[in-house]
Image (tube, rainbow, N blue to C red; front, side, top):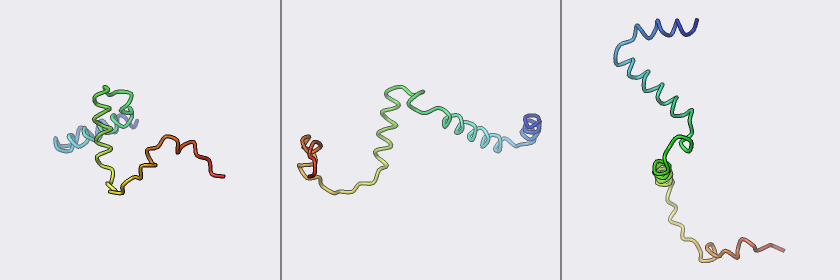
Length: 77
């Protein structure tokens, strides 16, 4: 019954309203499939770069010890 009701409601919408519905449906479809399942490696890389670009910049310099691999094996006694 819901499907028939929606079809009837859709028939009553204007073109601009239908465009908004189409945009909404497309956004739902893209949310349903994670990018890592549907995107090419290049698209995944672009998505990752866009995500990194939106991260806040802290301008806090890292100490050289932060890059020292041996620090991960250090055990506090």
